[in-house]
Structure formats: structure tokens, C-alpha cells
Length: 302
Length: 243
Image 1 (cartoon, each protein chain N blue to C red):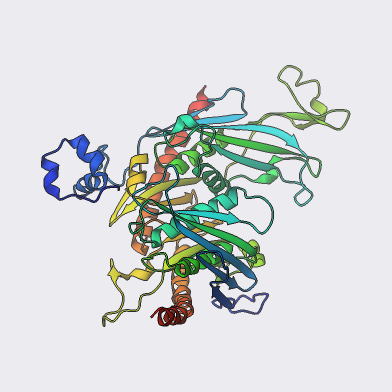
Image 2: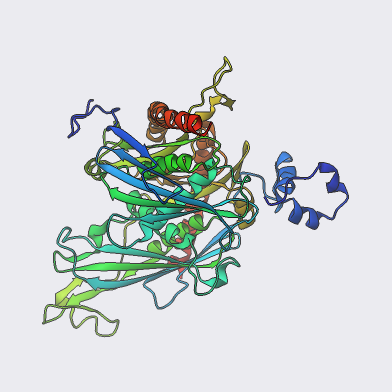
């Protein structure tokens, strides 16, 4: 990125690590011509992905998602609120994405990361566009009480493809979410039924038992980096900083395009490249769906 | 399958475009861009010496400051800032003025739909006015998708809210070439068909998105001739003054 690319002869004389630091773009291009990436992945393959549900015991739903070393911790807190006049029988979701200084060397304490509000906005747009959550399910008493779901996502390690990992952790946290049982007390207020005295208030119970949300059309995303004619799926932070053109495709389980996000970048995306990115996302969606199902079935066994 | 639009426009019809440049006295470059009732004013200051932290000092740096019509800036405005910044970075020649910062201040005067495309068009005209070296111009358009899969261009705020989905797209402008074969081709497609920036809201099928791309390309080709016509005479008169 920085220095102009030197003639190729130099590569045989200097150490590999030195070459990588001095001429990062050339270093990558040499790999790309061999259809391989420095970490040993083929171009279209994403990094190993894991989901651990229930990572935060105090939250109603939580998940820890890892894509390679990019790590996201998502947790949902539920609170009862009065719904707005415009939509009296709908709940609400508030999404916040945090990048504390531990996640990356470019985030400094006291100064919020520039990208954090952008990812946060993208996440709430994607989750509302996909229609994954029926907000009516979050309603308790029409016009009086509804659930407010506070979804907070913490980035613990930012090594590229932040949005993918954040969305995956958010989706996993929603699939793990158990809405607590609540009942109406004598004052007409909603109280959370605790495990012990659950039976006593049962006749006023608004929703009698802890329930799960039904998630329809779950969105899954894949970020790709474009460089010349190459498409690199699931880039690391190093790849994102060297080859600056990033395309994020979000598809939902019914194969609808929820978002195609390309914020600028020196490489132009032609129709063929867009179609290739969508095809890669389709493949990735199957992988992610499987990983999520496995994580969920693992929870049921416990 | 025709959809009646409230303002009586046809599906492919844009609102009247207006662009005026050099309207602010103190700014190094300025432009206002109007699409119907949406109006954005952009001022460019720079290049000023030095780059901000975390920016590459070996390249020119662009900072974008988004000023909403009212209220404080929130996540939406931050996202707009980032998108406009990355879009402008991709059209500027960043190697010419290394270790400098160019500030682009976007003031929303009125928002009646297609705000971000309007801001990108305005910023592009302001950069030309400021004489910042550019590779090519960027032309932005907003495509709106109705439930029936019908596409309308340049929606108003009301249309944006009532439709199923919309996409904003930025393309390079078409190039006037003396070569007989016309513009440069990349991967069998003319260069101006490449997408610089894309963003969507709402779910749509992949084919609908590709349709949007096609409509957007056709419309931006016309818009780029408007933009070019708007920029050229002033440049010629400035040159004659200088000469």
C-alpha cells in the first residue's frame, strides 16, 4: 500500500517477512496468482467459524461467535416498556455495537472507533430489513406493555469481516433468547415471574412460561475483498487494509438479498463480480446455517 | 404494470436536476445540488497540510463532515459520512497531494428522498469546483422497488418509505473518447458500468437488484451528460480568463 512496488527481483534477495512488510500488495499478488492466500486458504474459503450459545449467564440470550480470530460477544437484555402510540402492539429492538480498545491496535482508549456506529447502523438495518423478528411477538399487552430488547455486541478481537461476525453473533443470540415469564400484578404493572413463586401468580400471567422467538428468514452475510479480478472471501484485517475494496452481501434463508453493501473502494464491481459474490454468499449461508443449527441442538441436549 | 406516482412522473423519470457551483465565497470549492425538493450544499476546504491519525500520510486524505438539516448527528449520519468519504476516495487521485487533508462539508438543506445520492453528486461537483484532481466523476442514483417488482427511479421521501426496498448506486461517469471504439472495456463491460458504491434497504431478490443496476446505469449515463454540460462551460470561461 505504502511504498511503490519495487521490481520483482528483490523478492529473491530479502527475507519473506521483510518482503511482506515492505511490499504488502506485491506479497499478496504473488499468492493470488497461485490461487492461495498467505494463511493457506483458497480464495473463496471463509475461516473456521464457531458459535457458543449462552456465554453471558446474566443476559436473557447471548452468544459468542468466532470467525477465525475475529470474536464477537452478543448479549440481549429484555426490559418491559410502554410501546409507542404509532405501533401499540409491537416491541422494540435497540442494537449497539461496541469496539473497546482491546479489540484492535487502531482503536485508542477514550476515542470511539469510527467504524463502530457504522456497523451498528448496518446491523439494525439488516435485522429490520430481513424481517427475521416479528416485533408483534414482543408485545405483552397491546398499547400498555411490550418488550424492549437491548442487543449489545462487543468486539473482542477485530481481525476483519467485523460485520459478518457481528451479525452471526446477533442472530445466534436471538436464537438463544428466552423471553422471561411475566405477569400482571394488582397495580396493573408487569412483574417478572421468578422461578420460585411462579405458580402463585399464574392466573394473571401474561405469558405463562419462558418462550422463544420464532425466527423466520435468518440473514447470513459474507464479506469479500475485490482486487483486480480476484475475489477473496472473508478477509482478515490485514487483507482489508491492503486491498481496500470490500463488498458485503447479506442473504436470508429464503434467498432474498437483504443487503448489498459496497462503500466505495478503488475497484469497480461489475455484474459478474457481484454475481460471484452472491454465489459465494449462498455457499457460506449453508455452512453458517449448519453451524447455527448444531449450536442450537447442542443447547437442547443440555 | 405502470405505477402511478404521486407527482405524476413516469417510473424512469428523474426530478428536475439543478447544480450551481462556486456559491460560497470563503470555501475553496462549493456546489449545491438539487433533485426536486432534495437540496444539498457542499463546501470543500483544502488540501490542507497534514493528515489525521490512523490515515496513511503517503496519500491525500479526505474527511467528510455531515451536517443534518436539524438536530445532532447520529449513527445514520456517521454511516453517510463513511460512505461519502470512501466514495470520494475512490474517485480522487490520492497520490498527487500526499500528507494533506481535504475537508468536505455536506450541509443538508432539505431532504425529500434520495438524500445520499444527492449528497454524493453535490460533493463531486464541489470537488471539481475546488480543483481537486479526480480520476473521473461519480454519478449517484436511488432506485426504489415496489412490491410487484416494479422499479422507479429517484424516489421522493414518501415513495422511499412506502416501497418494499430501495438501493442507492454510484457509477463512474461515461467517458468521452476520441477512440472509435468508445469507452474502455473491463471484463467485457464498459467501465462506467462498474459499481463504485452500493447500499440497499429492505429485502429484494437478486434479480431485482440486477434490474436496479441496469436501470441505474441507464439513468446515470444521462445524468453524467447533464453534469458534464454543467461543469464544462465554466471551466472554459475560467481558462479564457486565466489565459
